[in-house]
Length: 296
Ligand SMILES: Nc1ncnc2c1ncn2[C@@H]1O[C@H](COP(=O)(O)OP(=O)(O)OP(=O)(O)O)[C@@H](O)[C@H]1O
Image (cartoon, rainbow, N blue to C red; front, side, top):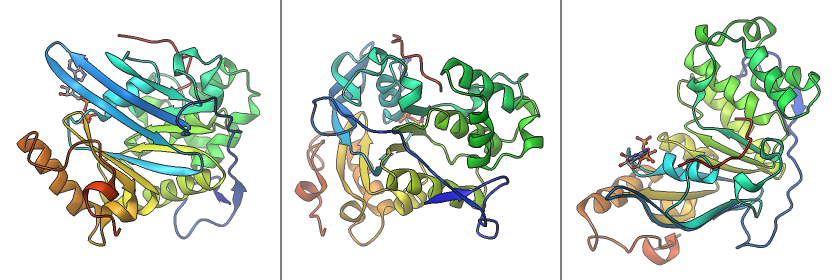
């Protein structure tokens, strides 16, 4: 398994493939997932951003995390990587709270905000700093640049001049520096052109096939449908449904299910299947280099 190297990959350019490796996964206790949300709630003032969210992500799978604007996806991912504390419940990665891991960036790759890089640094500098922080050899920088298809010339440009798609590739390169066993990505396909989306899909599939657990938050339902094994849909902070992509698509596509469930959620409790249920119960299954310290 592998992906194209050395330049932007797309259908016509995937000639040279290099193995995509995934870090070894060792899970400590828990519910059996590499990522585990266990009854997580988050309250801001009087508003509940997350309400009793429970789901797991298994090794060797891509899980699509879907929900409309304001559903709570970013809040959940921020809690998962220790940037925010849950009001109740717990979220763990590889059996531990992210903030409690010794060097999380080596085992957990994150991309939460591709625009968050210093605009005055070159892409290569960003990655070199990341590699040094993680205690990795500088040769790793060239390897991840190859993996994401950023050219040598592009890597020497300052990030302020990057397109959104290039920033996404840089963010993914950064996430992959430590050969992680877990990838947590918030809208990684934003700004990618069709070739970029195709490349991203292939990369995530290859990583999952090599054992990585991938949690992918996205609005691009069609793209998620093509790459994800499992889906978790949330609305108004609650899990509306979860199951395999086939179960939730029900032969008509994820979009229909998504629109139906989120419309019900908007109408409030009692108008739909009870939140948090599995697909089989509710919809008739046919089916950044982390340093890991918590915030507010
Ligand atoms: N720091 C904060 N203070 C107060 N409310 C917040 C804060 N962060 C998020 N929220 C609220 O929590 C809810 C969930 O927001 P969140 O950003 O997690 O949603 P999202 O699903 O990621 O949305 P989008 O798809 O638009 O990015 C929203 O109502 C939002 O206004």
